[in-house]
Image (tube, rainbow, N blue to C red; front, top):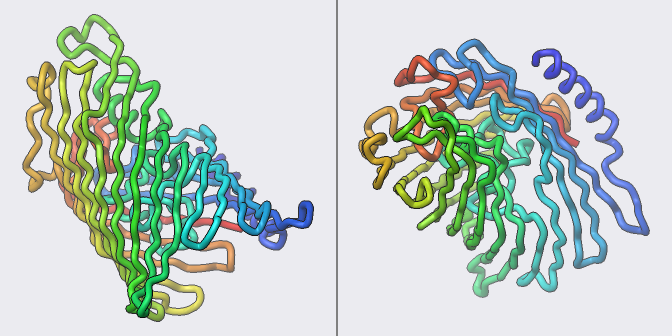
Length: 411
């Protein structure tokens, strides 16, 4: 693993040097743009293992990279696609995927359509999770953007309508997006890995996903506020151990949504070198388990407040406070095995994370981020938040301090 990590870093640094001056070329009088990135991280924690890695010993199993191509076919029509791969501890495991692939036609500034595998507009950062170079933070606030669940909301196979509406009397402008499509999670993502701790093996997970986002660039310069809503109809299939007869081996397993939605509210204010933003997300999930013999009622709430300040051209600092809570009640045949988890004051039902970070831009395409996380709780529930029993066989400690070092090359 260490040898692979070193090779990846040096190869991509060399590629960045070459391609930083060769990002576009002409094809039939149209400019084709080629961009990419590679990121390598190292994580050390003082107690609990985190993000499926053996971080209590220090782990560099934190690599991702992507390559995208885009071009304007006409003045109104644009196409593009990105391939992506990652290894995050036990997740990803270098199984490449088509991250997004879009055909976008803008009729007017107030109306456009796009289709394909489209990035999902949900809150401030869902559709820019792959653009790490835009941010000071090595990890986005995990209460709202858990990196182990990246595949859950980043894109849908379907279509969007979108536009920008300017308001009269200097009242700013509205930006809207409405979408519908199919979500398809990688089986190497966080939820299938979480479920494997119960002896289950999920072979497919996904379904209908639809929603809308509305944001307002207010008359106050630099102030943006917005809201998002997403509904889903998710099914999962695989195999699992029969809880009533564990010795009988695996039996077919299925789950299906009865209710599955997200409400998200957010704001952002930029003035000079300072940027402040905050978001609140509530996720409600009522899922039928084992072909309807049981039900899970999960209520996940997360919010954060963050700030970033650029000290000079090559140095930026930032901080955020992230608060995550999860409750879960299981009804039906499995209720005897899973007592209700409804007290969010318990460390098993929350994760409060205080973060400080610094970013150094070594040059225009290479940066290094150093980040400290000071966490209380481990929030290990049906919507995982980085802490997993498989890599913590001795149980969890209440507090976790983490050092994250991440370097990224982009072109």
